[in-house]
Image 1 (spheres, rainbow, N blue to C red):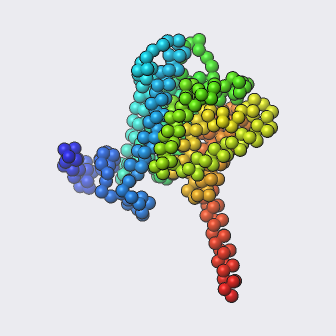
Image 2: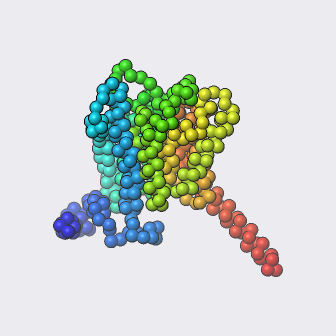
Image 3: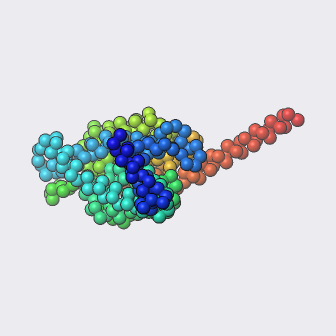
Length: 384
């Protein structure tokens, strides 16, 4: 109760007329982060229970923790494997922690600073969405990305991807993916998806990610085993390698109702269908990759559970979610196979469908309206 009493004591200073009133948005953000506010909604009944947006978003952070823990360990594992050293579990994990913490520091300092500045300028409450975005961004980046590049990417994603549209809940595309896309096109040497992403790897150590292997002349036989892909003991983005960790977090999101099962299932269906089409054609090694390898490689699984299901940028209608997810899966495989220059097609596929999600929902609603009009017209004729 001591913390609550101290907050209540200084709160009048940040209210209208107080000497720190211009920092009201900043104070409110910290207060509601610590305690559930006594008011949940301000415009309409879009939240229908005691869980406000901050509490629902924290579920996503909880779901990402398995990916964070394994990814941190894998950073150290890949490093010591490349230099040929054998160390303990805690040395491996500690090495990875020292590498990933700076990414989180940059992500949150840059992102939250921009969020607070825009909130104060607009005299609005600080948007909660960046708590998840800031946690996601380091997980989808190479661990060796320069911090200044990461800072620029975060600033671009928050300003262009969120704030110009009005902040959290108003953005058209996923900000975390936009940060990755910015690095992909601005600094392709760091984000191509072809090269091994290992922190301070040995100079003599070279190789390629699984996607880089198959889409640059390799064959299915050159890929890591399914067990390695599933466990995640391979190079890659921090949070995308371990499929076990992703599934643990994804199942948690499904159980809590945060992630849409329709989008998840339809994304798998779209990927499998497109892969089978390419398997039939089979004119190059990339077309011969089985669907289960396509799903296990790169960021497909991570993107399906944590990016495609973003409730802000995804389709909202039930039928629209099926269409939206199917197209994400199909286009991701299409980009991977048909354009080897972009081996990680999941990122571009989700961003593309983020843009088309409102159109999909509009078409679904318009179709339902036409069907109802026809039913009403038929009912009126039958009454006559």
